Image (cartoon, rainbow, N blue to C red; front, side, top):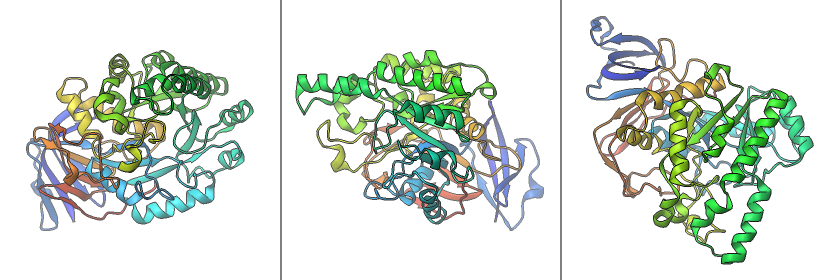
Length: 446
């Protein structure tokens, strides 16, 4: 059935206007202004949805998620985490390779694609990972099957650290896909770890996390990745920036002119090191959440254009895993359901505009990865849309958390805004009134 969305405040391409959207055959067929006559579009086969008082944004494209399947489904699955994502207004997601086994070959990509085709509630893509012994697989992978190459230049969850200079140079010289880098200097992290262990033993406080994974570890590794990219003219994307110092390595040139781009995640825009005292290992992630000064510099960089994309690095672990002591608790935070609400909270606080949020979470990801007919509210584009109520509070608690792991660092926090509906490829897949309601939809590989 076609749909006519009436009286919405539409945010798109730097503008905000009141209007109507006509959706048919998965795409936006007509965009009308508030004063346009839409009577000719109404019929018994058209569902009328009045969105008076609500804002409509392009669905978010999250280029950095860990959905944990295969092999780690006690933490989450493509089904469970993509369902949480649509409840958060995310309509497309790119998933990282550190599953079990890690996604290091084209055959393993095929297995993930088959699972997603059956179970994903969002449009999907998968990165292939680099290890010390799969360079040929990475360089020869079918580019229609992988959205990019994930390179760990610092160890994190999983075992894909690559430090060999010969491998790195060949990868940067010959990669046909964008290289997305987790940049933290491993040697500095190890040295910092030994120093902390000599001071605290095996059970230091969580507050040491940004001391072990410190500013210099991030800066040195990011600098090295950028030097390699400039040497080989590689298409490089630096994931989850967390420091002010790293920002000096980037340009605020127009996106179309950049070969080297950057990303910040919502946790580094929201939390500071002061939050470890209350939230402990719940907000342990790599790279570490750092000082307020670093957080505020990252916020400024989003507005100035030094940072191109906002993502989540959604990475669920069980509650039991996260309540272990510092060295034993894994790094990672579940975020896809609440990332947009977090960003809307920052809009309320005057940190960002809605237009900036849309640019960094929808427009720019679509441009950087070349996703056709997505990321914008345009006629002829897929109707991937999120409807938000900017003025209805929602308190996060166990009853409305949809992650398979069942917890969130935002538990008991009351957001000022709420996700009302999400459309994927023109289908209303999520609506949240008293109880969340989900409807199946056809989704596509990006």
